[in-house]
Image (tube, rainbow, N blue to C red; front, top):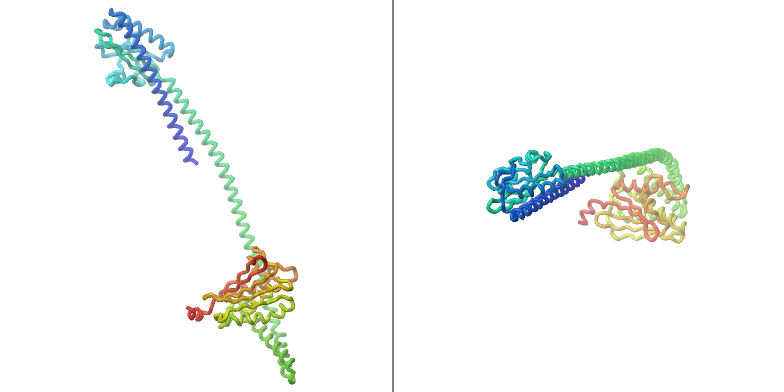
Length: 451
């Protein structure tokens, strides 16, 4: 902003100086024109009156008509600019200039201009004061008159440029005042704008700080609730282990007393298998809650899908939702805890089932791309909004009605996937439905073999 003001001021000053110089040039041209008119009149009278006689104050070589004409011209000039003009003459053989009142003056600027053949000259302040003019810059118009045998006369009409200079000074002050006022206005309004902008930035910064603090407080609250619930879950898990052991023991007793009843024996074996699975799952959850790593082992990708489908198949039959399985042949092996991976996929399948109405369809796919195995669950249910999809894995976040969900299923699945160095993505599916993608890295030896 300051640079703009300086540039504008410089251009305005340059233009004012150019106009002032042009005005002075016009003034010098006027003086030259007036001197030429004096010379023309004097030449006409000399041609009509060839008699030359001594004139007091000018010397014997000055004609009466020349003196009379010069005085008349000076009188006319003084009427136009009283006290600001003077006419001087220099006769043949004279080295000095004579004023019409008989004074002898030496004006170096006039002599130099005559020698250079100029039509005008600029006089200094001292030369102007010597001629009886104000001590200001003056301009002279120069001309010559051929007096025949008498010789050549030089005539100079000199006027002060005080008025032009005063106008130039006033114009300069007006320029300074205008620029000063404009600069002041620019600075005032600029300062106001800067102050307002600074207040807006400070307000935005405060709002951003408040938003960060609120988000931090919310994360802290969620972490606190998660920690409390984790502790509570660990306690429940520990307490569940005792009745689970009792169930397992009773199932084993029943299996030993079936007396050949295959139906009862099958039911007892199912109870034992599921109790063992729960015991392993509880142990894995306790390890994760304590900050430990899952018990990694080589797991067939297809077995994760088949195991999860077997666990939820009865839920789909009860809800009237069709479950389709599309698993590629010869899927690579992944490393992880099979029970945890099955549990994560079970949560995705159950969420998809609950999002569909009777007659809906859920499809589970498994594909490999050379580096990862992707387990994809697609449903044609009500779908999920993009803003809800971004928060789907947050603990206790749920879009289900109160009492229908805890908001922990996807959060647990996300933690399981993270512990296996994988990724879980939830996104809406067009025209309706939801798409959940669980990616796991292929076992290192499988990657080398594929390469």
